[in-house]
Length: 205
Image (cartoon, rainbow, N blue to C red; front, side, top):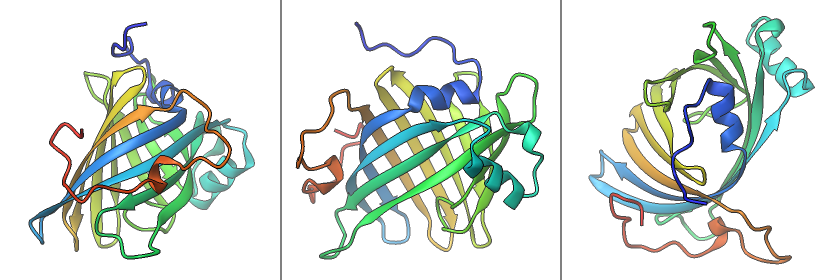
């Protein structure tokens, strides 16, 4: 089957469902303060969570939102490494988030997280789908703000751009490829493989 971009994506929940699975991400981060680019890689797993899941209910209650507005969400786990990491340093964790649409089509609304992208405290952001079926996530923190855009280049290829503005200004570009085969016992995850010290090209190769 040809790896073409998925047909029109109806709503944000459908976008997240298409994102479920295991992904390998190649990342290029540009640190504007240092005027340097840093390469990295990560292993990401996305699992759908039903609207009635206790974890989503707890997040909605934490943010003081109406439980009836929840349509579903996801649990995301990651294991990453970057070229500037010190010996023994690792970037891994997990986050649960829920969607509460604020329009009839389900293409915009609130994104509730148990931990943020730029800070680890629980945070509520916003999601919106654009005219090309890309998903925009905006989140404001006490000291910074982040903007992410996700889009599909094909059923098994996802592109991600992100910017963080505040105390630390960065811009990143990721190419994420779906892993279709189950890992062999004892095999390294992509994030455990060595990271090249050479920066990635603009296309992430």
